[in-house]
Length: 341
Image 1: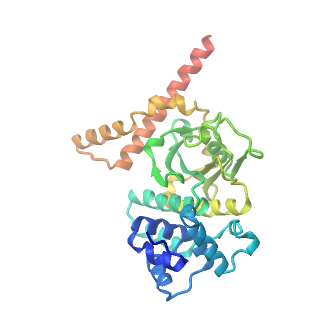
Image 2: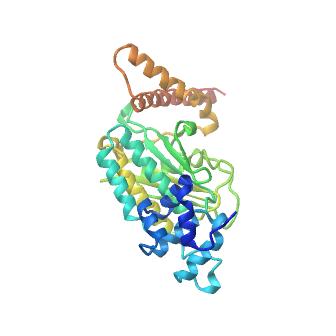
Image 3: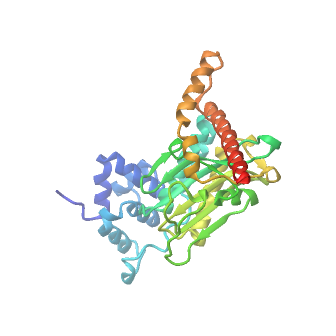
């Protein structure tokens, strides 16, 4: 089987592989038309975008990485085996256009999903192009309940670089004051968790679950804040990547800022309205959350019978509120039983 020997030959070869082409376009932050112009020699590629493009598939194209590095003088001969100065640290303008277009054109309730999907997918590729293991999660504030306060957070969306696959209900869980996400939301400031050196960490708190239950090297929770009002946070967890470097924190904050467009104005709550409770770990929550999808389907069916149909997002929101009340009741019972002992 013929293998392309030069980077521009490779660009021509991927036109017949839509899946690989999509991954590369996302990694480089370019359009298919731009890629076609590069492949045809009609336009000279931006060296950093081209390098990021090949970083997305390092195992298959390490030789082409070196080819690009030499041709565009990205690396000195002594550094050809090293990565490019922490790679480009700016979000491509074409991606801002895509997010803004989604914010302007996609109707509710799909707008939240569309923007969150775009941001998590692109941020994962940008921050972890080699798929070493990065989990990005959007954690949302639950609506105020008793006392008019936000008492918990919930998982909204997860993207894991090892799978490059989004999920929501499959990773359902609540976060409270004991979690990294809860701490960041409560103080409206970014919180960094870093394990010194290569030491292993057994995670005791639900704030770093569900995709990093055994060990984690670093985690960062960036609250989603607008004018001193909080909607949730962007949570990044990795067992391989150091997330505390200034370049990576800067990128996380930029993607966090784009997520502001995924929330409606009434989904932001004043900081003094955030009163998170301490919640049990994921293992304790699992039995309660196992029937989430069935409950959503049942609620939609019942609403239709009563001639007040609900869409999926409306039904999910109501079910999450029911589950929150049930979880707090469960916590209260456990506390009472503990006091009796």
